[in-house]
Image 1 (tube, helix red, strand yellow):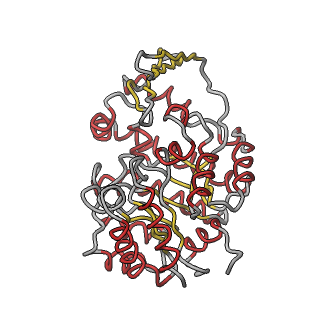
Image 2: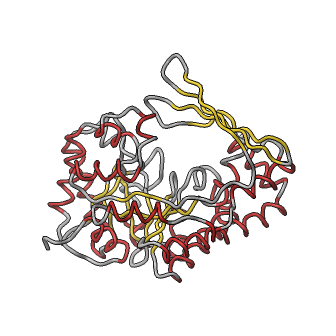
Image 3: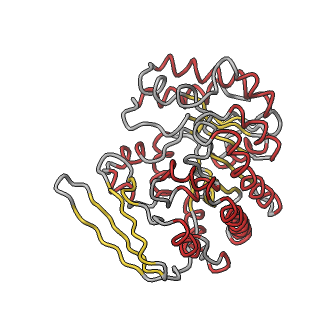
Length: 379
């Protein structure tokens, strides 16, 4: 089937349809695009992400996925930002938002070698700051501008599957802007449950509205839900089911109602959550990490297939460190074949990586992953 495109191959996997072969989509997020384009990480993060991915997928001649998004309406509050160059080439950024509850200050560090990370988060006082920050985070969905997303979709075309980023599950949403990050977020879930239950419903409604916009006002066929702490490794299964499953479940229904698909990112351990994802009808789940980061192993792969078969496309499981960085091409070939042997029979397989490919990964291992999947994964 010479006319099959990378985008078509990815969408077929989401739907459980066999075309010419399994899709193979290493997660090229920051490090590999920077290497391919010859950029440091600050330059990379100031380059349109969809465009950097497009050049990287073309370079390696493989399938893939990435995200784009709309432009949000203006903040209801004024503010100003500044950048401070540091002697070592890094840049400290600071943004101050002026609100009736006082100034909200965010600071980040841009690094030449690694993606930026936060130094200071805006919500310091839960009861005083969250009500105003909510107005910033949950802006009117009807006022979003979808033209930037459509421009990216048009430019990418069939080169890979470009999805619209909707947001993150609730615990990531409330933890991300909170000073004290993960640990403080866990305390907040216990100490401010009533407020957070209401906020969760508003977060869900906001995401549903964005999904409808993405799938009706652009040519996107799939939406994407990110992940940071929302996994069994960190918040644990009970808290995930209480706070995050309702969000993913509602967003999945919204995507399907609008005629689209949904792809959910879930780092770390996910074996206990697989029945939930299958029951909710999530179309694609990634990255299915092997230990020590995750818990999808050679020993439990058959169970993973039994739980998800016919319901969820699985994307991932090639070990980014032990196999791709430290291994040899023969190790990569062996692992890719193992994944295909176990999971490819119903068409819902994307040979991917357990998290993004590291910048130090040998090219010969990346090529071994892609070429093995192409040759061995023919339908």
